Image (cartoon, rainbow, N blue to C red; front, side, top):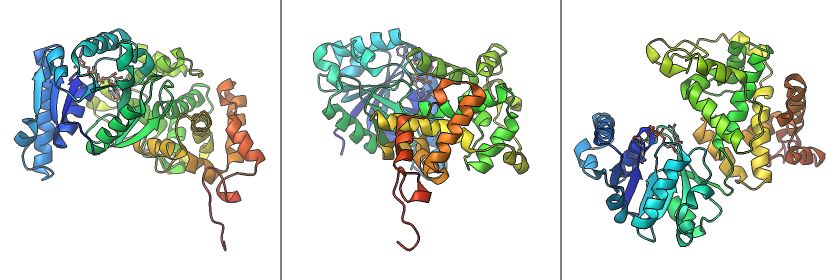
Length: 401
Ligand SMILES: NC(=O)c1ccc[n+]([C@@H]2O[C@H](COP(=O)([O-])OP(=O)(O)OC[C@H]3O[C@@H](n4cnc5c(N)ncnc54)[C@H](O)[C@@H]3O)[C@@H](O)[C@H]2O)c1
């Protein structure tokens, strides 16, 4: 049960207006802040439009009852002064976040939790813009787009974040109807973006180096791995510029990866995916068009090559105790819509086969990032191969047991 009654959401853009809507839908009082009245007005009309659709479907009685719980302000200090919980969703620039948090330090109640929805900036650095006694109250609360629909929230501990703040953030996520996972170490990209980047970048490198055509890769992802979208389809959906920024931000913070050259080339050519009408595929009128992919194309690519780099990343996160096995699997299921957890994929293919696939990628693409994680090697030595040996990341009952 969360004690939060009033939330202050900073930034009324894509994420902020969605978070405000979710909170109001769940009966919380919200104050929404932005730097210009027109941004607040735009956000409120988007919220109203979305609530009207929910009212039409009978999910809520009326939009006005929900919308009255949202107040707007252009005054950051007064908005912060009576909030129990602050969620910052301003642009992804450290100087903006630091300025906001130092102002919150002077205006928010001492017990208020100060959360940032950053996707790629270090929580610890954000928290260093508040005075030392308050740093324990700063935390990452990473929602997914669109917040009204996506269930997952990555709760990210910075160096100073207290357990009490983690508990309050978990409680709020629950009160918002979300599924939190705990990221214990403030690593760049947290769980979902790291796993996703390994998967998408490998697919892209395979196409760039001429190993396979993108349609063959996407068919293998859809029909071989059973994922809802192919790798190039998903890249178009996310936006090539957004993906390029995510990868660059993670690399700048020490994430070891050879970025696929197609992203920056397409970005300079204005091929940004769905939003520009053209990405890897054409999306006429900037509307997402699912490419038609013949099932027979899937047979040309061994699907384990696409999933193995994501398993390797997940193994690293588990070995380094960044997150638990169950939270990593929950994160990929809810954040990437994988039909099963990444460790479940590993167990069904076999840990030995995953290692073999990584070696093949290392040879074909010449990148050191495919070096199998020590956890995988250790599991193979111990005979923990997955379903076939009865024990892998999970335990399996063998027939007759
Ligand atoms: N878009 C996504 O898919 C997504 C997903 C998860 C997390 N995030 C993170 O959420 C944050 C916001 O992203 P977004 O996509 O909603 O961006 P956005 O550009 O849509 O919205 C940002 C809003 O912040 C406002 N703003 C500008 N300067 C400000 C300031 N000084 N103080 C307060 N508000 C200011 C802008 O007017 C705008 O309304 C970023 O940190 C981003 O990394 C984005």
